[in-house]
Amino acid sequence: MPLTLTLSKGVLSLGAEKQAVAQITDAMLKWHGLTGNKVMTPNITATVHVLPRESTFSGGKEFSGAWVEWKTPSFAFASREIQQGFFADATNIIHELSGGKQPKENIYVNVVHTVDGAWNLDGQAMTNEQLGEAISKG
Image (cartoon, rainbow, N blue to C red; front, top):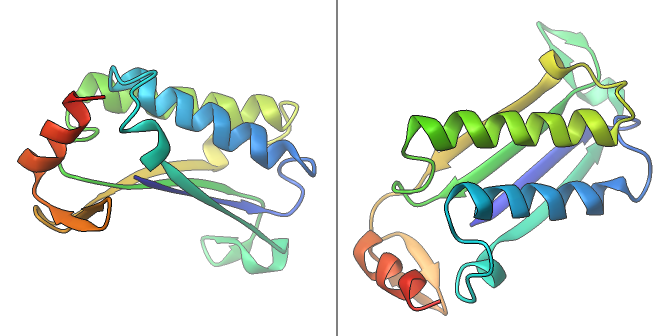
């Protein structure tokens, strides 16, 4: 499940991005009841993009923002409880790691779901059912 963390430069201090990825990953696993799952944990990957403030916008004007985006199968983040709990955790993680400087209203979290059967695990396309079976073994 790829996580993309995009930040305006200066939202987090240099090196705090690694803490953010680790904590956001842990929160995702926690909210899905998968903490310690040996199949899912190594299949959560992440990229971090730190952009100049002049390249991040709100309402067409430059600003400092943070974006947490997951790409997942459709069964992930499916319950309202998980959505609300994880989104609050992710927002708080970025806010706290910024030393409280990054306003919560400028931290954005979203999830993009893939088409069933279009998920790659161990080099093969898997359906949601196949993926669920693999994860249940972990």
